[in-house]
Length: 218
Image (spheres, rainbow, N blue to C red):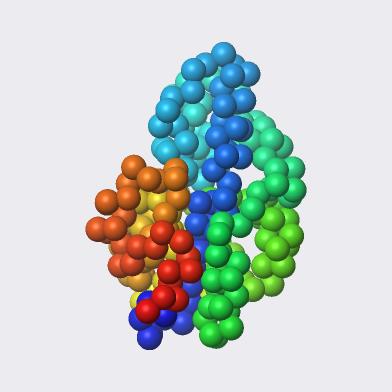
């Protein structure tokens, strides 16, 4: 395995790292903007992906001068994706096997995500993966988005481990950078939504994986 011997915990982002949810959010965003007759910027999903939902709502309301309060935007998004997560969102290739193997090796697992439990827990339960995780941390609980290490630090705290004894698995550049700032071993995982940042991710992360099974290749 390619993780350092001192690693006792693995903290996983969900969307784009463990869950193949890109198409769901693209569809939601497309419908959201079409409903309002606003052209959807090509880089919108890339910009808001690192944000907590309420933070993304404030950004969207401000950027596009929307009349609705952020709370209503958040609820609209959640209503649109709830069924998709429960019934259609899949885990990425090799993701389930990877977390099962890590769990079997005695490494504690946690989630650090910008998504809400009500969305992703049905997906994990569908795969029987929810019981593998010892802790969950949402950016909404950490107060700041993934441009800061707060959510990863909260996940490590809930695992009762120091950051230097945890690996953070992320698909977005801002998340890898902030996890580095928090003192974690960082593992970047390829996702099409972050393909434009591939070179930067390879440079910034301690380890870069195209798929999670590469973690166990010698």
